[in-house]
Image (cartoon, rainbow, N blue to C red; front, side, top):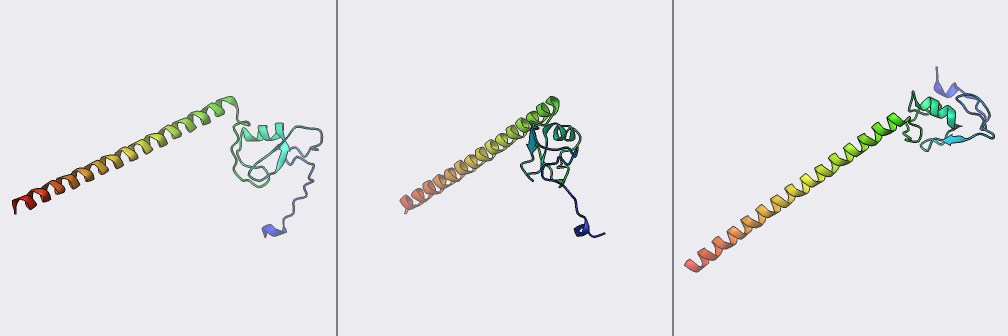
Length: 120
């Protein structure tokens, strides 16, 4: 079967989850693909699946997560952010340490050169 032959008859004012009209309801637009659904429909869908029901693009929206998932997402974000900060700190401290060693070696060579020049 060729995918181009498949046609989906979707009305612009129709929620593709419940097939109900979008008029006069609170709607939700998925930012990544701009597909529109009833907010309650997509919220229920999001409890089981984090992909757009129509195009299957993955999206993350903390507003749609239940409170437990939101807290877990927030904790994971904080943990990743803390790890990233520690990595940067370690990187810059290592860089500073290498620079200090380089300066000490240059100073040592400078002192040796001065001593050899004064001996002759």
